[in-house]
Image (cartoon, rainbow, N blue to C red; front, side, top):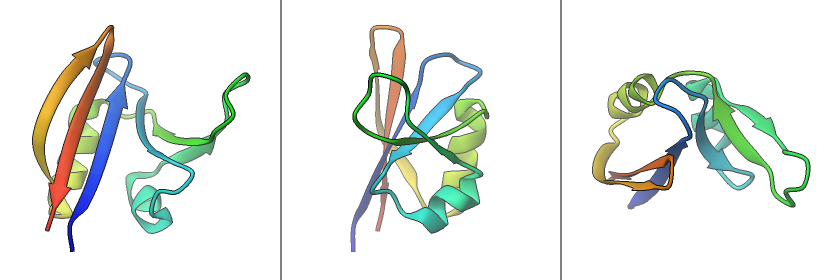
Amino acid sequence: VTHWLCCLSLQEVGPTMVGDEHSDPILMSFLGATKRNILGNHFWEYYVNDAPRVVLNKLESCGYRVVSMTGVGQTLVWCLHKE
């Protein structure tokens, strides 16, 4: 089974968006993520106040590995893969 996960960060120190309303609740709990809905958005997201490097280290300990990273404006996006 292949799993993909994308992490977003608007800043180098956090917060880090780690999922949407369909994300695995067990993984979100492991990351210490909180579910929120920002006024004006029609969707929910999970976020943590940790810096991206902390989140990426936690995900690596679960078997995820970074396969790509890009910048979109001032937002950084990492795509991870887990077999």
